[in-house]
Amino acid sequence: MKEHSKIFHEQMDLRAARAEEVLRKYLPQADPCAKTVAEAASYSLLAGGKRLRPVILDASCRMYGGRSELAEPFMAALEMIHTFSLVHDDLPSMDDDEYRRGRKTTHIVYGEGMALLAGDALLNLAVETALTAFDKARTPEETAAVIRALKVLMRNAGMEGMIGGQCADLEAEAHPEETDAQKLLYIHRHKTACMIASAFQIGAILAGAPEQDIEDLGRVADDTGIAFQIIDDILDVTGDSEELGKLTGSDEKDGKVTYVTMHGLDGAEQEAGRLTEEALGLLDRLGGTADAEEQAFLTNLVRSLLTRRK
Amino acid sequence: MKEHSKIFHEQMDLRAARAEEVLRKYLPQADPCAKTVAEAASYSLLAGGKRLRPVILDASCRMYGGRSELAEPFMAALEMIHTFSLVHDDLPSMDDDEYRRGRKTTHIVYGEGMALLAGDALLNLAVETALTAFDKARTPEETAAVIRALKVLMRNAGMEGMIGGQCADLEAEAHPEETDAQKLLYIHRHKTACMIASAFQIGAILAGAPEQDIEDLGRVADDTGIAFQIIDDILDVTGDSEELGKLTGSDEKDGKVTYVTMHGLDGAEQEAGRLTEEALGLLDRLGGTADAEEQAFLTNLVRSLLTRRK
Image (cartoon, rainbow over all chains, first blue to last red; front, side, top):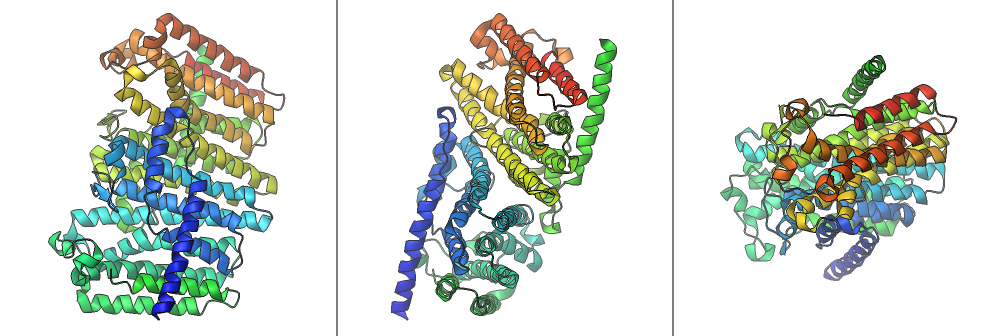
């Protein structure tokens, strides 16, 4: 088991490095008059991170024998949208964070106005980047797949996806007393699971996967995203501060509504376990056209996310 | 002449009302949990305004016999991008404006965090809206035209377009002493002319206009956008406060670098005149496939923008 897990982590590192390489191909180029916003956008994009979303998108495309030429622009675009959301989330009018992963946040380095523009620029650049996939499409079917992938990407990022989740989250922080179980689920699902759904589904769509598999991968993403957030809430209560690298018990101190305050520790553990089982079961039962090696990689990835203790 | 101008203004009002109607078709729909961000986005979109960009896009598509079904999503999308830029420009970290067109700005009504999200949501919704044009395309040529229109839309909005101009503008305000003639031209061209270019060119692209006309319309837009800004600078010095509805002389008081401080009043007047002549000449000499009535409407529109005294 330990050997097994070591192999997975080596694989993960290799694939994250590949995602990083893809991202670097699409870094912003700008006129000298606009170089600061391009620099701020690059600074934010190259702040490290697990590159989880592009790695999943890549694997899901490979799983159905898709062409990496089509997937690459979407890998970069998805990471750009994720980064845009972090840059704006860190702004003083939102979470007001000065550090992220031990590095100064974009507005601390470039000022608030420029960070605002850098976030805007990243969302715009994400679309420009994804649009280059049309130049790689060789058949009308591939063009249609790129159109569908773009729609999924934007829907999951917008008011019916991530931005909708951010809106509900912002209001929940201001009015914790009005936050019920349904709203909390809405926040987890939209703020987190929607972008994971883009990763799982866009790769499969670009590769022309069977409809049933695309649908099942959407459920895998939903389970994974929600379980991931519940585990975050659990670790904030039970985790070892040193191992987690951050203070535990902070949610309680902040009076934050979490899955644990809402359903108790046992309820939260049970729900996370149920979602994890469901996600792994769905991945295991994907249609016969799925490549076994990529299927195993994605299963290991979901398992590693949902059995983490830090 | 007066009768002539009256007819044009009636036409303009009718077409602006039509653009408004199109925009209302694409207003955001959101889950009750995300209704505040949808409301804030609608509040910003329905703040009035001349709807100049969608009106131009519509006319440029009609001029080449294009289908309004294809143009409508882009008319709405362009106005959404314009509105997103205003919402973020008004934020405290940018221009810090409390009123726009006599109405409280979005962050004054909904708070700074929600206005930030509403701007983000509008850019995202613009893309989702433009993507619906694919559902209306009937031939591979129309699909290709929609792809090209999307690329033009996003390029002109992003770091190589409007956002690039906003970056240069933000830096010019902080360091007026470093702003030279080239930088000032860059700001006018990118912050203003690029979005006008989207309007003129996307309509023609969707209608399958000749390449030479698409190129010429890009130059018309460039001349128009730059001349419009120069006239703004001139009116700030020579205009009648009461007629303009805002304080004049504010640029000088703010120590702002303008076309007038850079080239003098005569130099600015001359350049605005030259650009206006060039734009009108180009519009007049468009290829033979252009519909004469729409060509006349666009000529009148450019003339009204560039001979305004308020």
